[in-house]
Length: 93
Image (cartoon, rainbow, N blue to C red; front, side, top):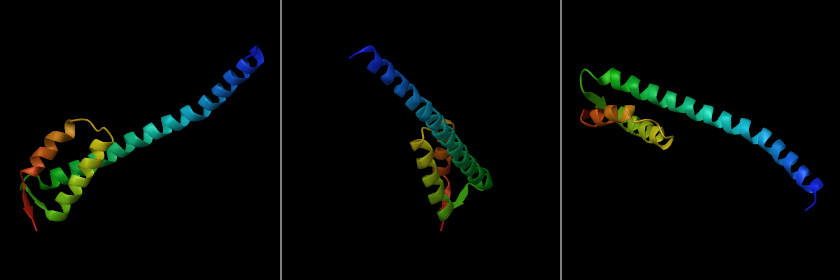
């Protein structure tokens, strides 16, 4: 390989990185936003039912789907405590 080919490859890699890095940053921001939305919805359900410690079947199923999605996106363990507590509640059909 001569110097011209190497310098051309370096420039092309730089251009590719200039395109790819902003896309990756954007995707990471979307993931963080989605985790925030999932966590917020789980907390809303939790605080809505916390006093009675009862949850409707459809709310419980939705809570489980939200939790699984949150964990798939590498959500932190803060919500694990709430998830475990909700699992002990009476499920209303």
